Image (tube, rainbow, N blue to C red; front, side, top):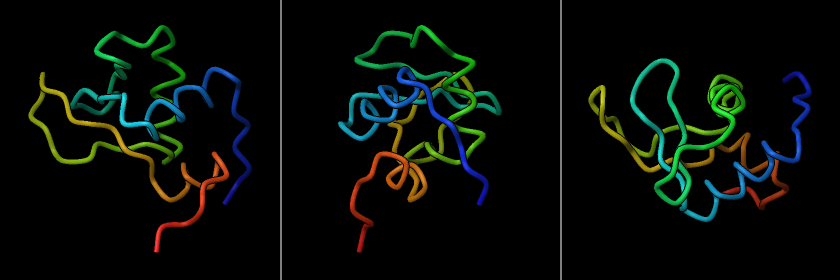
Length: 84
């Protein structure tokens, strides 16, 4: 797997996802909300999705939202212990 360089902002987004405070909009370029508010850096949010660090917790129809969750790669990026 290639090394992914994360900015402080991207790491903060990952921490919000890990804390259960984030949602992803359905679509190929899913937008990120934190605490119900649109994230200020949607291109970075899109990159986290395309890099495979975050994903929707369950499928959603276009125009709807799903809780965001970290992938195993996202957990690794934050230095979290691997899920059993």
